[in-house]
Length: 185
Image (cartoon, rainbow, N blue to C red; front, side, top):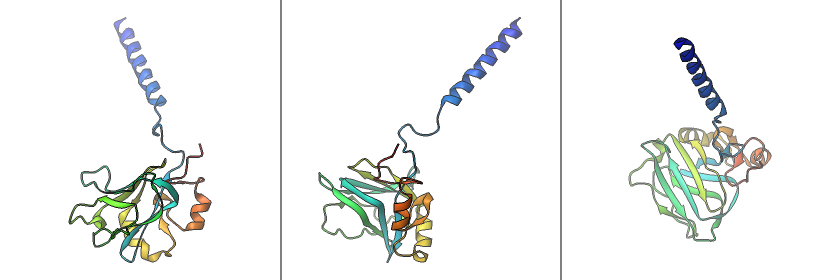
């Protein structure tokens, strides 16, 4: 009799674990319905960002190398409210120094640490503050290795690959979302 009771408890416990596990969704609750992407390329020794579509009202931009690791390092840009429009931005020189401020309202507030070589990082991600936006990530080695082989109007959009303006216009909202494109769902 004790074996039957123990067997029933084990079976119930197993079913409970199965039900709880099956009910869990691996996608984050507020994750967009399509992967967010931003474009990166290196041109004339400068790491460049293309948001893919304009981001209006940007009050901050956070560039993070090796996010989620002990080597994680970031550069922070800021602009006064009500923010600025960002679509293309020169970020860093391959020699490691910041691109000189252009005198515009979006300026580096927190530079990378002195001597930090971002070209040795595994990944680069960008997050936009101000408008509702999603972050995006790309492989640094791929950006460095392939930029010179790609036409100047194309950027590496993470998992979506190298895209030009026509590609972004065609695929945005279908296979990915640019960082400032509202989620259609």
